[in-house]
Image (cartoon, one colour):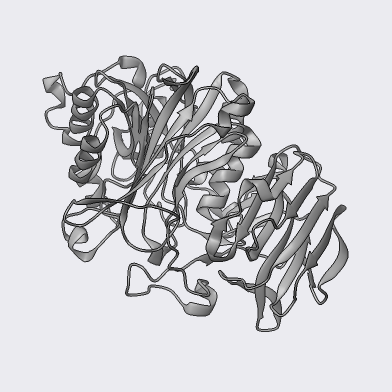
Length: 524
C-alpha cells in the first residue's frame, strides 16, 4: 500500500485503483492463524458503511486504510480481502444479509465456528463501501480454508462514466462471469483482481486469456495480477472491446510496473484509433520511477513447464508454468511448409490451412471436442483447436509447450464447427507477445485468419470454445470520463509489483495495479 501511494503521486486524476487478488497479504495461507491475523469483518455494500469516518472500524485497519485512501484521493478503490463471519444458526437463512454465514443446523458450522470468504470490496470516492463480492469458485488447489458461498451473487458498481462488474481469479473460467455481463447489457467493463497461474496450452495463460475475454464478451477488462513468475503468476493489462490490449505487462523480471492508458467510454469505430496516451513505468525497489520507452523486454527462457523443469525454483524470476490435460486432443504434426489439415473429435471438426517459410521446428495442430478435467475436480465443456510450437515428452505429442519460435508463418486459417457462441481467440508471437491485432481476424463464429505483415515468428494460434452447459464438478469437490476530442474516456493504470526476499519479510507480495479515471483509472 505504501508503494501504491507512489502511484497516486504519478497521476492525480484517477477514477479507480484495483489491487490484485491477495496482493495485499503474505502469500502463505496454510493455517487458521493466518486468517485470524488478516481477515476482517466486512459489512455488506448495501449498508453504505464508511470505515474512514466510523470509529467502530478502528480495529479493522485494512478496510479503514482503503476507505481513507479512496476518500483522500477521490477515486474508487477495489481490493480483495478476507471477510470473517461467525457461524449463525437460524431457522431461515436465505433472506438474511449475511445468509452465506448462516446455517440451519449447528453441525454445519466449521470447527473454528467462523467462515472465511475471499472477498472483493469496492469503495467509492467518499470512502463508502459499495460492493462486497464473494469469490464463487475458490481455486481449491490453493484455497483450503476459504469458504464457497452458498448463495453466490454478482456485484456491480457505477463509477460515473461506466458500469462495471467484478470478478476474482478462477471465477473467470466459469459461465457466471459471462452471465453477469449478459444480465446487465449496460455493463461496459469488468474489474478483475486475480492471482493467476499460467497453465499450458497457452489459452490458459493470463494475458492471452484476459484479451480473449475482452474481445469475445465485448467489455473493457481491467486485469490486475500477482507477479510471482516462479509460481507461474504474472501478467496484467487494460483491454478494450474491438481492440484488445492497449497496454499490458508480461515479463518475468520481478519488477513493479505502472501501466497507463486512456479508455473511451464508448467504442464506436474510429474512437479505437485515437491516441490513448499509454504509458509504462517501472517502480524500482527504492521507489524511484522510470518510464519505459518502446516495447517491454522479454526475459522468458525457452521452456517453462513444471513437467520438464520441476517445481519450486529458488529464484523469483525463474518462470514456471503448469499443465492441463491434453490427452483428449487428436494431434497432427506439421511436416510441410504448406498444408491443409482436417481433424474431427467427438463430432467437433476443425481445419488448419497454412503456409510457412520453413518447418524446421516442431509444430502440432490439435483438436478436441471432449470435456477437460481440471485437477480431478472440475469438468469444463470445451471445443478447441490450436496450432502451437510444442514437443513430445515420453513419446506423447505436444507435452512441452515452448515459449520461443523461429518459424515464420506467412498465413494461417483455422476453421471449426463450434456448437457455442462463446469462442475465445488467442494468437501469440515468440516470447509470448500478443500478436498485433492488424495481423489476425476472428469472425466471431467459426474462423480465424492470420496474415504475417511484420515478419514476426508465430508461436501459437487457437480458437477455444466453451460449452458452459457441459461444465460439472467432480465427486472430490464436496467441501464445505474525461474528454478526448468529443469522446468521453477513462484512463487506466496497471501496476505490477515484483516480490523480493526483503518484501517477503515485510509481508509485501508481488502485485499489479491498474486504475482508471473519468479521464483516467488505476488498476493494481
